[in-house]
Image 1 (cartoon, rainbow, N blue to C red):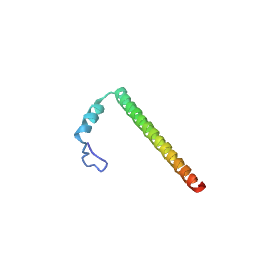
Image 2 (cartoon, rainbow, N blue to C red; image 1 turned 60 degrees about the vertical axis):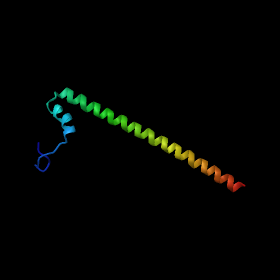
Image 3 (cartoon, rainbow, N blue to C red; image 1 turned 180 degrees about the vertical axis):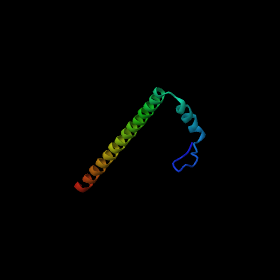
Image 4 (cartoon, rainbow, N blue to C red; image 1 turned 120 degrees about the vertical axis):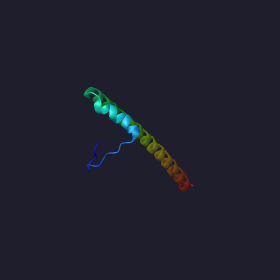
Length: 76
């Protein structure tokens, strides 16, 4: 297999186990595989977004708590 610069493309062995069967797989199988990969990527992105949202909520709560402490200090 040749890379972009017509040099041999080196594919790690663990990836060859995935790539080789796919190169001879019928199109419906390849389509299903790619569809599953996209679904997995979307699920991971949703989890990351939920985690970031939670992190932002925690930061906001911490900031609000610090503001309340500062207000109490200023009012005393």
